[in-house]
Length: 145
Image (cartoon, rainbow, N blue to C red):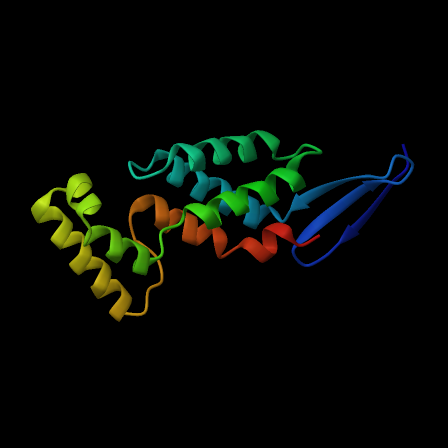
């Protein structure tokens, strides 16, 4: 194999020139941070099954030739799963929210979401969404090659 590499401020891209295959290697600090936040997300009581599965698939792909592809899929899943406050408020104030949270708790959830929104937040602050927001804050660094 003939290898060529390019170092950027964010990551290293190693390419097998002969076979035209590339492996994206994130900067260690970014990788360590995203791995930690991925575990936080997966351990959260509020994490969806889809986000857990995407997190595990991404963790399994780290350091392999599938890492770049799985990183893109992982980010897409996280963007789909994170709960915007407007959606949370609407759900908490609905009959469905009352069924999920209970009659009293749903009022607390809606009030809390409104407080977060008034303070400038965009997303739910449950443990899973907080971890996802932290991961998505590193999106550009995760994808840059």
